[in-house]
Image (cartoon, rainbow over all chains, first blue to last red; front, side):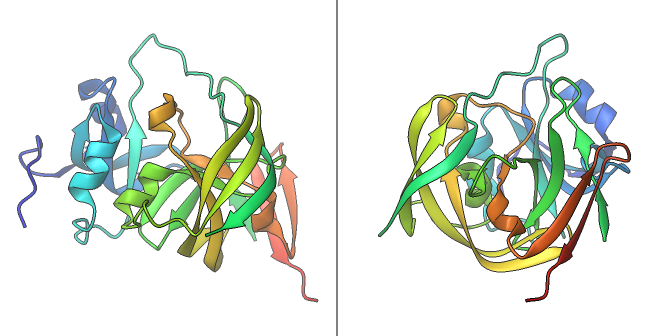
Length: 98
Length: 133
């Protein structure tokens, strides 16, 4: 199956290169290599990018077998501050099974 | 076993890497105030889950009031070297609610049932070991 993507050929890039090229976008990264804190990506294979994360998810769902692991990353635009996440869950009060 | 974590640069949150079904890596916030783990629904889409088939609905107390979330069972979930099968989680649509955070969910206390864990804020490490009954 051929996936319509804006990336001509997935290639390994440093995170600095990805950040420079795709500010304000979601990137899908294959086989990410993380630094010693286990969180920050140092390099990885840029598979695709979009301003719409969900579009990426549906486009690549079931089509990532070429990668051992993959992850999404939002590239914040330089000079912008992190959004305050108002969704912080605490106690689950009630669960109804369907 | 000890595992590294990152402190959020702006707010000091504890961020860790977790693995969904052996392939989908997520960065989540370790949230000791949450009773159940909750993740962004888009992560489940790319992992192949059908969002129209939740196994339950839950009401969750949050910072902005009571919200309804859907309940799913993950085939396999790994964090801190511990793999759980049929791990029951809550799912929320981060994107639909304008959440562009650097993490894709919250790891709640349910994950740590049956373990002893210690958060070392000096070395930024979490040590965890199962408690044998």
